[in-house]
Length: 68
Image (tube, rainbow, N blue to C red):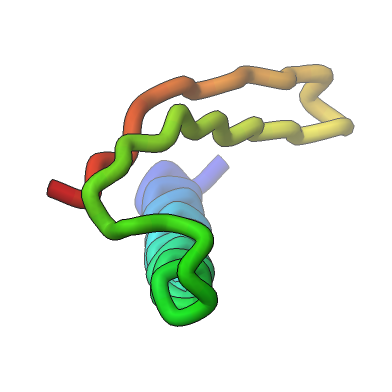
């Protein structure tokens, strides 16, 4: 195994997940504010699941997204 290639691959994957997740959340919040379904002062519980089938891992991350 090439440790450097492995680490770079993981970082690239996590960066893609992070950037795209942030974009989707921002878009959903903007739409909800525009539609009047949220005021823009809320907090939302959030959950992300990481799954790698061939490695038989499934791990959930939980947190909170606050708008103020």
